[in-house]
Amino acid sequence: MDLFNLLDTYDYGGVHFGRDAASGMCCIVAIHDTRLGPAIGGCRFLPYDSERDAVIDALRLARGMTYKGALAGLPHGGGKTVIIRPNRMFDRAAIFRSFGRFIDGLGGRYFTAEDSGTGVEDMEVIRSVTKQVVGTDGGSGDPSPFTALGVRRGIEACVKLKLNRASIEDVHVAVQGVGHVGYHLCRELHAQGASLSVADVDPLKAERAEREFGATVIPIEKIFDVECDVLAPCALGSALNDDTIPRLQASIIAGAANNQLAEPRHGDDLNARGILYAPDYAINAGGLINVALELQDYSVEKATNLTMNVYDTIFEIAERSLASMTPTYRIADVLVEEKLAAVSQNG
Ligand code: NAD
Image (cartoon, rainbow, N blue to C red; front, side, top):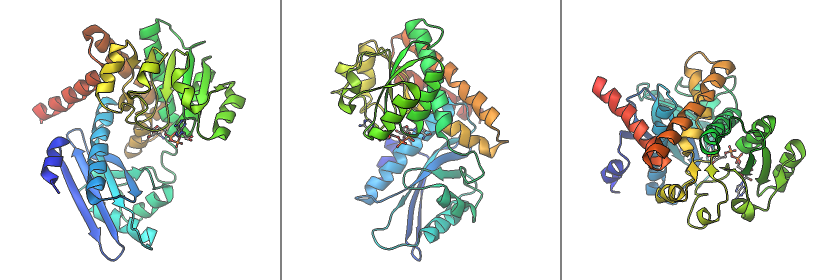
């Protein structure tokens, strides 16, 4: 594997490989950057077609965590773990215990949390052998309401700047995906008087939003064509692509999903169409803010207050973008790189 080239591509840091033959645990712990503080990032437990795919997944995701944490003003760098799910019988607790011992030996440089394929129970197993874990039972709890609060604040900032409206009352928001975050986002938006259109592959979830928030249910393939003020992608990645961008009727894109741009050039396409895009890792930081506070003195009030600041972050990015005619995704990257460079100079 061309490992060091991969590390150059993603501008790394370090990667740790852990192996425990007895339990079958194979993990890749990618620590992208620790200039702002110890890295935080979730732990995936999934099958992969190849070890290379698993490494790339960890590298890509950890880098994103650095950017998300830095922009949110957190004293943390970015990391991510992939534990390759064995394709034979395994003892789940033994794997997570072994992984916990492994990260315990990394000198406090990395805190793990749940991610795709892992849950609170796995975090409890990890906690039985190390303190390097957040998001356990009795910790900060479900991050989704905080992510949704941050997205609502980001939408308010975009609406102020792009539509020159002081509130989101009567603003029409189309939400793609009303799962954990999308549901709470609808609740937030409805409480502020916004009108809603929603689409979800799970009709029960869409119907719940219709029932509780008066949302109009849209067929999933039509959500990008809805005439609305704001589109909020809250489902899977790559929602903004060659097919969907030409169809958009919204002048603002602001949602929770990670990796919304299929490729960076799609951020240029949105900019060229005059659509204000709130960069995903800037607007969806509420959940990370909430979990990171576990390492300080956690309170719901603190997590709420810090998440409210997503408004200022998005406003600054959008303002700089409009002033310099530069796409928002590039402005966000530059803001992070400035922060990291400032720490390097002082360090
Ligand atoms: P979730 O799985 O609970 O919700 C996703 C919803 O999207 C589901 O209801 C699913 O049925 C629906 N969906 C899937 N494909 C769809 C499609 N093509 N059209 C319409 N609906 C579709 O996940 P979540 O925790 O709500 O996260 C949503 C997104 O936000 C993900 O991209 C996630 O990575 C990101 N995110 C979540 C958090 C968090 O706190 N949970 C934090 C940051 C980012």
